[in-house]
Image (cartoon, rainbow, N blue to C red):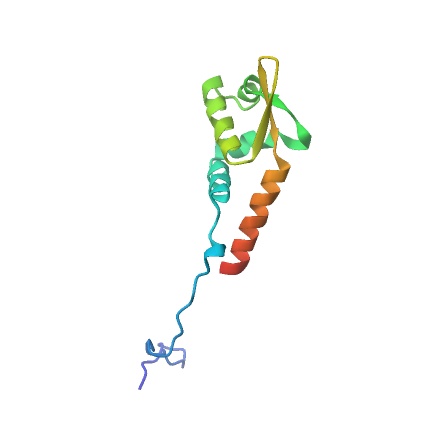
Amino acid sequence: MSPSAPGTGLEIAEEQSCCAAPVEQPDEVELSPAVHAFLKALASPVRQRIMLLFARGAELSVGQVAELADLGQPRASEQLAELKRGGILTSRKEGKVVLYRADKQATSAALADLQSYLKYCC
């Protein structure tokens, strides 16, 4: 006889290892390195705050980001580099100044990959 869950009237099923089919994990469901980098880039509240500066297609230099986000220029540069590695920002050079902007195409691709993964596992 199986034990009962107290007060529920439900029996707790005994472990049936002989009857449970193993769940196979297809390789194509793994997150890509690009999605890992994307998630890492978004994991920081500072980088999340910086991303809001790029709303509506804004292009900003490191100095502008540092000023607007109230960061030192070296820290702003580090954060922008991480966002670029994550595929969230792209950059272009204009003379001696590097201008950053949101990379909507790469972000959309990473979000689509993440959504496919979450649909499979969740």
